[in-house]
Image 1: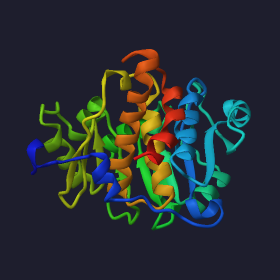
Image 2: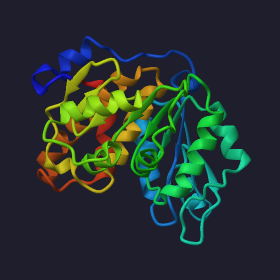
Image 3: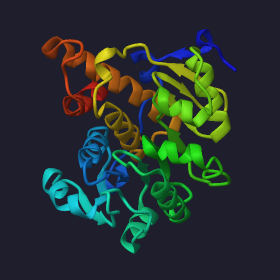
Length: 289
């Protein structure tokens, strides 16, 4: 497994030599991203991920959240189609998947699942049903509680054709590994990539299942703020929508996320900016690489 010294450092020049696809045509050419997440109490996580996907270049956005929050979210994000999902008495998205969600999942180019979800057992049921209907070429991003569900059901992705990107934080990596991560996060990222046959973006360390590895060094403490991870997973989804391969999307997203924070620091300090403000910097950061 590669050590930290064997990772390729992500720099603007590295990204320029690995240019993002530049789709021509209408919005469908830049992909349809479906974000599934939220609870009665956390629809904002889906808003952050969804708008970040648009800022990263996705052409069409669809959001699926609890029925009780769908109307408010549709007003907050007028660019998106928003559908409501059944919810439990505690306000979580229920594993009972309605037909209209399955129809969207079957047609989506990218599915981003996890932002704002909060019930692992219900998520497991939902994931099986949604992944069963997803197109074989559709990319899938797992974040937050979707990663927790995967850690409880490690065969969930087995024999599935869809390319997958996992975006864990260190705590989520611990659940996926089944042990405390070591200080060598490059090694841990590659172990996860190999175990789950997915691209992994872990705290600035990106690993592909074929053994390639990268490191992003621009991130600072301010990125550790509420909602920041939802923004990062949304950027990944948006880049996948416009045609990037999984490792490319993860590397560009890690850089865009980190440098967007750098751009905000002069105005708000190292730790004073909000995740919603990160979103507003994403398109400019990507465009100026």
